[in-house]
Length: 150
Image 1: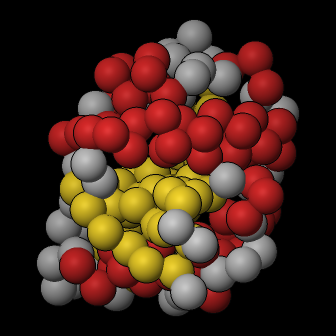
Image 2: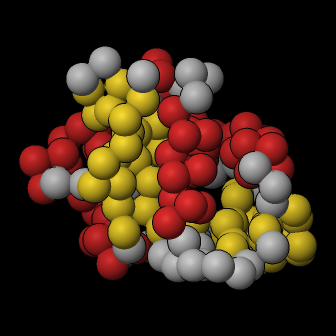
């Protein structure tokens, strides 16, 4: 059974164990492997803890996390060995239930088809394709799918 609870500071190493390999997967899907930053750097540059952060616990271990605001699902990472077990879906649904009423947004790197499929299953639709610089690592240009849910 997957339990979701608020992040606690002692969870940092376990969310890094989820983020770093899952982020490498995400970037590889987008052809941006060189843009990888480990969680301590990414969290600081991208303001991870400016968001509400919740963790997923499976079999007594933190295996993933989600970060969100009232309108935006901003971070969602699951340890690769725990993917395809419903953890990402559970985290996303939990975040969506806690977000404000009204439209919700998520951005997905072009090429990250597993994430796009997850968000589509949850009811997000692709609104537009955006081009810009990678938040936290602006040396890299990115293309993202800006998706919304009513």
